[in-house]
Length: 92
Image (cartoon, rainbow, N blue to C red; front, side):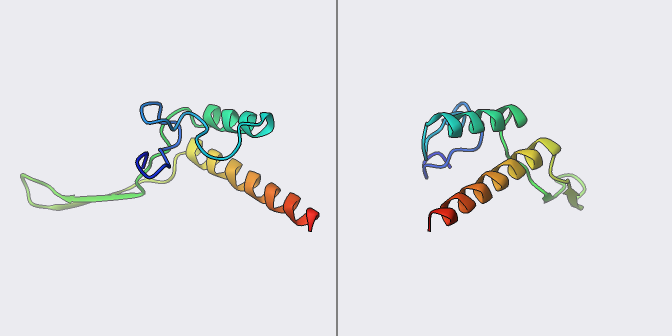
């Protein structure tokens, strides 16, 4: 993802713990820092994983709901984007 210019959120090894796109102005920077605090780890999650067990050859499937911290960060970004859309609409 870093190679594509979109490192994983809060990935300090590949630059996802810094603002790499957009603006570094104070309101945006504060917002991003709040989101890093809400989700203080990589925002990487698999809802479903499956594989064939190497010993039993049984297919195993696992499901997991989105963790609260990732959901909260995503909701924060949704609100931010909607706020930006509203502000742009007011300029038209």
